[in-house]
Image (cartoon, rainbow, N blue to C red; front, side, top):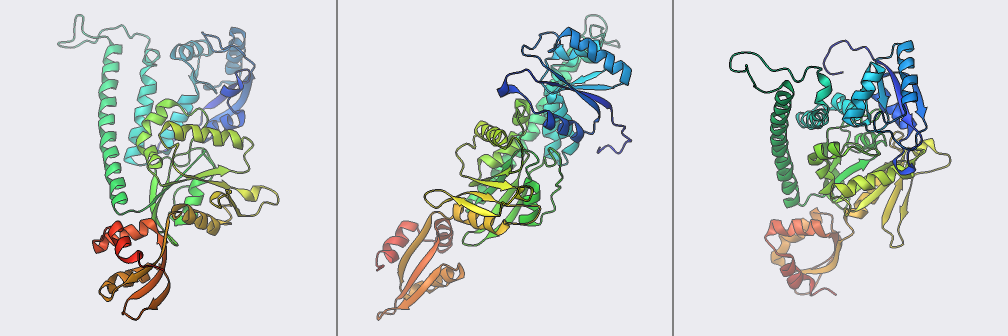
Length: 435
């Protein structure tokens, strides 16, 4: 907890529904991890077989009575459902169980609140929490119809509920305005990087797939990494030098999760846009996860939702140290393009293969030619050597220099802009004389 106050973990009962449709079914093991990540003192998990959710309690009235008895006998303080509850279901359950009730969205929001450290992250979490609370205001008071007293407030006035909602709307508007400023600042930073033609690489993946550990290995950034869900919320950007590419920016982002609540996607849109604007996405996958394929599918779904579905992706299968007889290696497409890298960030095994694959993905457009440079272009010749782009050099009888060059197209454009040369002019003047 960040407040500095002494916190005693609440004795908690988890309720998981087994009978819902397979495409909507949550993972009980992941549910347990979420509860533990939130700091709950889990007293047990009840699995309910329910094929048709009930309108009043989500589960049957008989099962609610069983839960109420368990809550009383074990002096439980909190019951968490591994499903999304409507406000009325949440209120009905709290009355019946006589303790606090939380649904999956509320649980994830609580974890996010604990893990947000930057100004932007805290604003994003607060906005998501306020949007969640706004539909549940009625449960916070039993006398919401009472009128406020005081000078100028006697008589009809406004109800306490109306006042609370108005204050929420004001605060939410203020947060959105501040987040819009952050969004604009991010866009300015992205434009600056694009003008400098610095490629952006973004780490994405299911929560706890090992993104931050990999990020730290590659950049030595010291980002908080732990074996828990949503260890990283705030995006971190670092500069990285790659062979044949030069400088790139590497971004570590918040992890995704199955059925990530839409309000969280909206709240973190400014952060997630770092992925949508990237030149390459490194989709970090827990190779040892039991539900690996489902996690991959969920990440792809969220990427499509935030407008990053068309960005080039390199899959990174992490944690191969937990698998038998799997060595670090690169898998390529029929065209020879890297599509998948197997490694272990924890053991620092296969990192050089990842950097090699990233370089190849970013420099697929190579400029390769023989140039004929006259003596007055000696500075351009020096810049090509400085960029390590020259593969061979000869001189002809007229004093011209013949250079065999190979360098990323983006690097060539950057170099030519420094010399005030247009690419088409450069090719016409110097490359058209190539052998």
